[in-house]
Amino acid sequence: MAKVIVVTSGKGGVGKTTTSASFAAGLALKGHKTVVIDFDVGLRNLDLIMGCERRVVYDFVNVIQGEATLNQALIKDKHANYELYVLPASQTRDKEALTEEGVEKVIRQLKEMGFKYIVCDSPAGIEHGAIMALTFADEAIVTTNPEISSVRDSDRILGILQAKSRRALNGEKPVKEHLLITRYNPNRVKAGEMLSFSDIEEILHVPIIGVIPESSDVLQASNQGTPVILQEETEAAQAYLDVVERFLGKDLPLRFVAPKNEGFFTRLFGRK
Image (tube, rainbow, N blue to C red; front, side, top):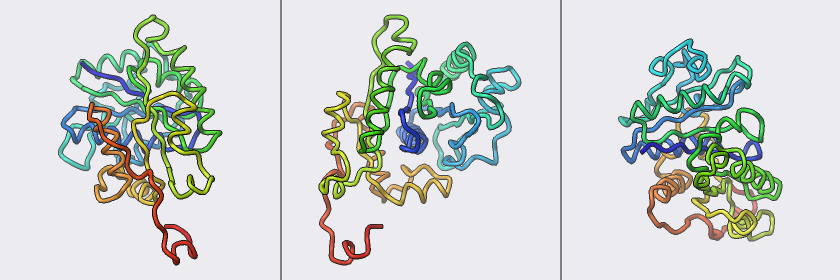
């Protein structure tokens, strides 16, 4: 049975789109037919991270408004021989172009096309596009940085998931929530400059699905138009691979959460 997963947060710049790209790619690497949808109408960044920006002809809003079919708008990922597709957002349309009826129709058609996982890359905050992204979710990956304002905003999103999702409105089983912490630096946690993952879990009362270490590899991958999960030798990729394994039911310990011993020159000149 197909599942709809929203990747969301209350705060911008926490790594939602990076997470959506790597999470969807990881599911596809595991053999599951997966599509990732960009709900950030007017901005559109997912296609850049996926490296398919030059292949966008039709978009999500074109499909909703009947100007193109899903087959015309879906872009197959070029990085490997797996079934991963991107449905890009429109850069020129108003966010109100996303209607609940239109989004529901597209998701239904994607399920009929045999997609196992439908990943919804949400805009930040609680505006219209974000509400549309979470409305039909079965599960949610709430993404936060280890700092208090980001955690507070994530708490707000959790409240909206529990109140405004279709499952909540219909009195069905609640959206299953997962907490993902990005840009985590154990040495800064030790120095009291960041919240610890256990502090964040205690504040939000949501089980942690993963901790992604702070790393320049994430930015480098994004600039290259490649989901960082495909750079398997990096810690960020390994952390995202662990997230996918946990989502699929595997019990794995958290990695990259213990402080590293830093040498003299690292302390003197700073971290990479």
